Image (cartoon, rainbow, N blue to C red; front, top):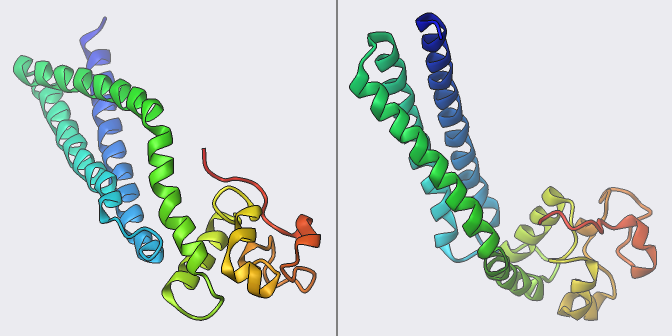
Length: 194
C-alpha cells in the first residue's frame, strides 16, 4: 500500500474520531439539558451518569483524534501504536457495552418505569411539577402512559375525570380529542421505546 494512501486513511480515521467526539459531546449535553424537563419524573440523579460518561468519552475521542492526526503527519511509530491500541480498546468497549445493554435492558426499563408510574399517580391536571413533566413527556415522546393509554385507567385522575389527559392526544389542540376512552384513534398508542 502506498504510504500516501495510508496517511490519508489514518487522517480520515482521526477526522472521524473528532466528529464522533463532537457528536457525543452534543448528545451528552442534550441529555443533561433535557433532564430539566423531566426532573420531577426521574428523581434519581444517577440517571445522568450515562450522559456524563458520554461527555467524558467525547473528550477522550477528541484527544485520540488529535494524537492520531499528529502521529500520522509526523509518522511517529510510538504515536501510531498508541492510536491503534486506543482504536482496539474502543472497539472492545463497544462490544462490551452492547452485551451489557442486552443483559440489563429489562432492569433499566424497570428502574425508569417506576418513577414515571408514580408521576402518573400524582397527576391531577393542575399546574404543578408532576403534571407539567408528564404532559411534557407525553407530548414530546408522542406517547400515552408508560406502556400505553390503559396505564391511565388505574390513576386517580382517570377515576375523577373519566378522561385521559389531553397530552395523550395525537393533536392536543384538536377539538375532536377530548380524552374520552371511546376515541382511542385520537390517542398516541404507539410505544416509543425499545
